[in-house]
Image (cartoon, rainbow, N blue to C red; front, side, top):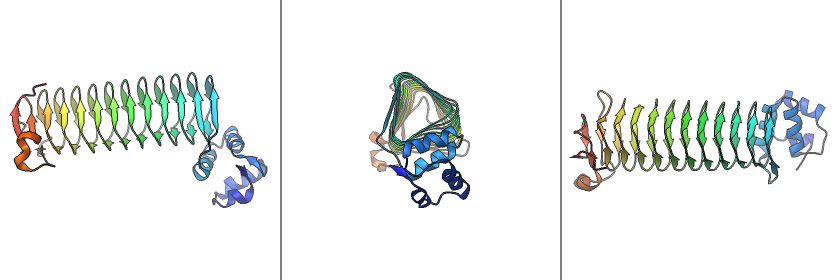
Length: 290
């Protein structure tokens, strides 16, 4: 793809950005060359605007190690070792790193991100496909993933988490705001949040669920230890905790919401050390057998 002034003007750029482009980038320059020129001139936001408006390419950048102030690449980035960037990373397609990724700014990929180490992201982590991380993830702002998320260690996100598919976290999940998961949410350790947690299918947590506002799943909810929410607890089918189940003061505990009442003995069971206070639906059957 080659750029001309007329080609750029068709996307209605801001007047200041268009003037800079006309003065500094020749007609007919290549797409990635234009992006590199903008980044090297410190106009990283303009480079991101260009990539968002003109879309990705099939180019592949392959390196042993990537270290830069900022990276905006139209295609796929493949790095055999790690990525260390002082600002943002924006790839039109995928990002693959054999070791970790550290970025003081946002990390964005139009498709998948696959990492053999940790991810440390200073702003939003945005993934258009799946996120696969062999170690842990720490995000200072939001995690927004269209596909599935698989993190082998801890997932720590200071703001909200939105996952379009399923999420599997090997150890703890710590969220500074709400968690929205389109399919199953599985956490090997504890789940701690400051907002509401909702899954389009089931929620399974090996440890405790604590600090969340409302807790809701269209299928069942299971925790190896206790479940403590500040608001309501709602399970479409059964609800199970190895210890106690506590909703917030004045809120209820609901199981079997998506099945008929006569099916509660099978699909609306509530397992806990004692009957939860405020149990509004479902049937308590005793301490968890697990």
